[in-house]
Length: 280
Image (cartoon, rainbow, N blue to C red):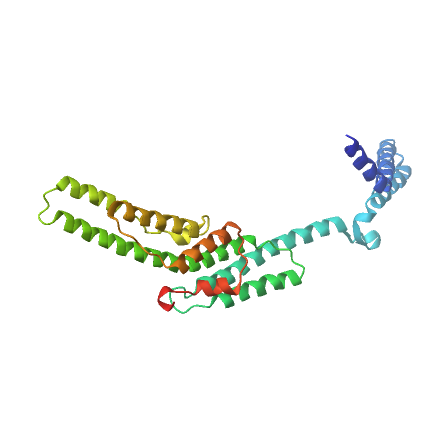
């Protein structure tokens, strides 16, 4: 209540002239109509003129310019609002075209020789930095999130492929173990089917990583699924799968980085985004 009263007093002190001239204008306008109804045209005209100028002076601060009785005037507050609306629309347009330029650059040539991540991040920094230098406060957090998601996918996908290759080799070994255990023809059909059911539990597909990277910690999920498959192969078939320790450590590091999104881009992460197992 006290805060409301304070705001009301501040408003009244800042705008008392407008209120004063507005009240005088209303009074004069009322007297003008009364005079006109009484056929006192001269008095009514004078009072109407006084009412007009009272209303004009009550809004004087709102005018950007005034050009005499020809009444070429612009309301400063209205122009400010129009300018603000235009700036907001321009910001939306700028945000859209910046996103299209950056994401087209990111997605172009993904399965061939596209741009390096060094150049992609340089383009993002250049475009967003130019807008900041021009004083345009535009929120590019959604664009950064999209770029981060693709960046993380490029880092984690080859790591997932490395783990999947080892699990696939383990599954092949388990399948051969089952074949040798039950022979041909199979005489213990129940045991044969039970072991194959256990083998089907060993899953390491890593589906939809590109889409999942937008909302999930894919490094954590890749590591979790791979370790689970490794444990099942050991428990059910006594097959020990050995992962590349560097791959595991990198996934562990990426788990922490993804948890703290947005990603802080470093030369090491850019190097990881271009790593492929066959090149290591």
